[in-house]
Image (cartoon, rainbow, N blue to C red):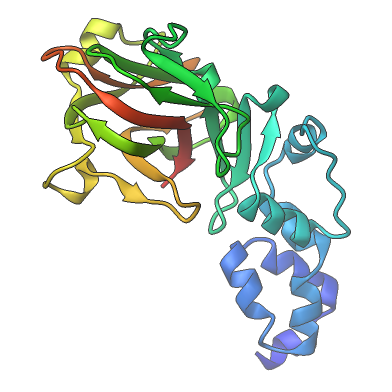
Length: 260
């Protein structure tokens, strides 16, 4: 460590930029020089996505932060809305990889525009202006797509349905879920390898909902590897179209794609 004390602050910043956000934050405790180096824009800009300026410039709300570190943690802790509020963007705090949530209004929900089956309303705790509330259907089919080119490259992603239960709900038991590259696999092919997950009941933890830090629940739909971002659209789908029992009380905020 003595040799590091003799190094110029700029060199230390460059070294820290090759580590991770966690390592950079912890290095602040080493010395005053490290603390100053770890706060520099050189370090924290290296943890931001290469296209962060383009993303931030399209935010529905103006963003102005005095340092790249503040911008980084703001994007980790406070998702921003893009595309007229149809999409939210944030960063994974540990890695700086991109996370996106597709708003319920942008999902493909069968019968979603039929007032007898679904209703659209505001929700105090939603990041979007509208959520979809299930009134009564027997055919449950929800799809969300995102372009692989906007995601972090060479990254394993998982897709989650982000939801709540209404004051009353029924018929929400086991369902099928699958994630596919739209250009590479047909609906029928994907359905044959679909996973079984469950809104309620017992089973492996990966099959059941988990509570999120924001108070919503999430149900894991599947995963995929985003290599170079050249696979076109990736689609996450949740469905119960076999037993056709009546279902009620599901409140959908969106489908989130995030690294794991």
